[in-house]
Length: 170
Image 1 (tube, one colour):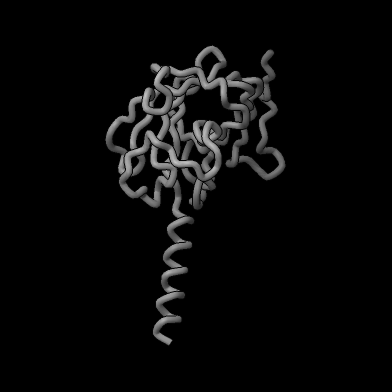
Image 2 (cartoon, one colour; image 1 turned 180 degrees about the vertical axis):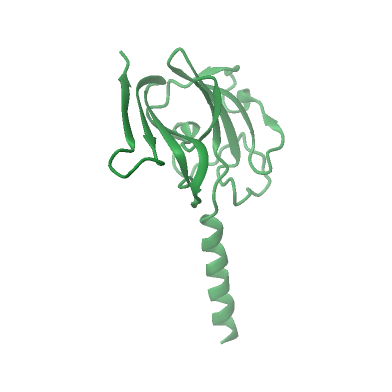
């Protein structure tokens, strides 16, 4: 019986650790520093592969990826500006540890996908990157270039939250 209780406790603690809210990336966009709930650097690495640039300390449950990236959008292009160790936010990670040819800022031409930015007050906490903020901004990126934007205002009535300020860039 004692072994069953210990096993159940271990499973509960282990699954709770994976459900911890994660430290967001940082994105400078529109003159504002924002929480970024997307990890563009991860698309460079095959799933489950070790990232040799990360300090070998055990990761914090608040930052399983082991690093926090600082990004910027400039002239409709996504750039990686800096990396630092995960949580607690401590030392800088030189970009040339990821790729010996990288010098800041690095144009993120490898990334295609959607960036999710959170602005305003937190309306609802969540695990991972699932917290809900007053405003979500979605930037559609193709090979490092912003191709469209969309904004959702979670403070508006249901059905009217999405702003049709979608802009498409060529």
